[in-house]
Image 1 (cartoon, one colour):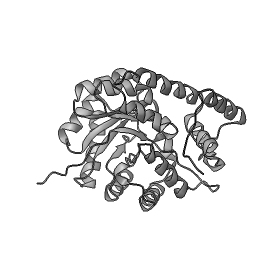
Image 2 (cartoon, one colour):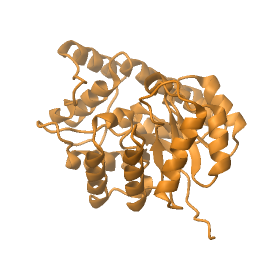
Image 3 (cartoon, rainbow, N blue to C red):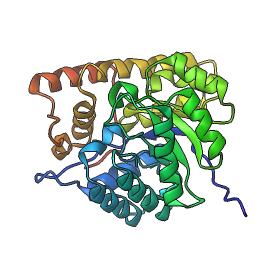
Image 4 (spheres, rainbow, N blue to C red):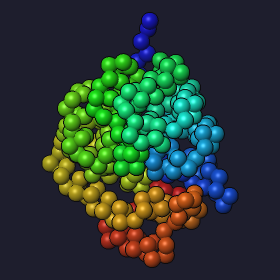
Length: 307
């Protein structure tokens, strides 16, 4: 059987925030414009990630958005859509569609509703998706985010998945917030594609042989994060990391998704970006003023962003 050779992701990816209209339906045109802006800043697209409000979107909405992005000229080879869901058929359907549309990878949460599940159960869940999709082009990047999902992807589970599906399970996003865990992945699985879940860990990840980061802040600061990715061996790397940490410090004082949307709304001049889908709520007036004061102090800008 001929093996399918697919380039693995590396660098910086953004879990792209999802714009909504007044009726709370996703706004595909705005999303496409934002994706093109991110691509122009050397940032890949992890659409339907946590900061995309992915679990507030239906499978149908995600499929429609994915189709709209491809039709708007967004390169699917630069997309790693989040496809993991609690229901196995939902994960299979969305993953298969992403592969069909040419996406170069799928970022896959474990089924996360039931807690305390075993590695055996999670292995079966991933194996069922792989077998049912049944496409040699499928490349899965596991999504480890125990602070939210409360369902961890253990090192032993990773090892078993790699052994069973070495050409399919090719990487992971570690959003544990625990550097020791990321370091353990890098050391135990050489050649496995490891992404930090925050740019705060980017320099350490790259020094440990990792691939880059998939980070909320890439929605608003892609060029600076990409610069550290390209210059991590330079004398200024520590200073570049410190600058990224300063911006992160401002943003994480607020609920992250509304804060990201507020920043995009402000710098694009497009107030529609402030809208979030319940149960999330937008920033208050006081929070908005505090956020913009913090960003102004850093002389932060988003050049090229247009409504």
